[in-house]
Length: 306
Image (cartoon, rainbow, N blue to C red; front, top):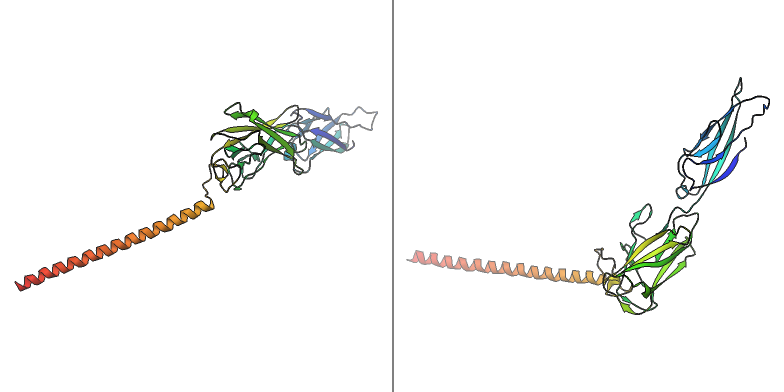
């Protein structure tokens, strides 16, 4: 047998025959059966002892393999002739190919993750929108304390399908036509960036939502949805599009610098008032105690003199 190099798609279903391995016995004048077995470095394959059919018994995962996308299998062939058994080995090097089995994913720092990608991606923004000015969004949760770009990538790392953004729907419905969405591919990381741009100046009510879709430009059209929630305090002030120092997520308990300064001043004033109150109370009680003693002494003296 000779060493073999072969490619296999990660989409190959379990129990499928990948290839058939054959070995020739040089004793052509003898009717000798050859049997096959594996000395495998993994548990993903099995071989039929008689036919030499190599079968996949555990699914492949291109994205979980790391940088080395090859698997090695050693096939062991043994003849069934009389006397000493004759054997041969061959190494099969299988290169795993990526398939389109994963959809796109939104990505930003601090998001809630599931299987290493952002789950239920959500952003916030202000209520006042300006014509032809891309809305600035804040991530939820907002751990970076600033606005971020809306970005997504194809989770099939070996394929890197093109992604296009669009508005899937809005709440209230029927407002999709008020925006246009631009998609730009980044030079690094196979990421795509979305810009959601109002077509006119207008103000929305608190709770207005845009459901933004990231979709692969493939036959399968796999997609992922994110939500942009419009709120009055996004960006630090009502209607601000990414201006100011607020957190913009509605869930963060942190305060701005001005709010912290105000809290400190109020706390100092409250402490001074409390201290003054305690001092006045102490003085009042001391004064009352002194007056009571004088009256009692006067009564005592009057008693002796009688």
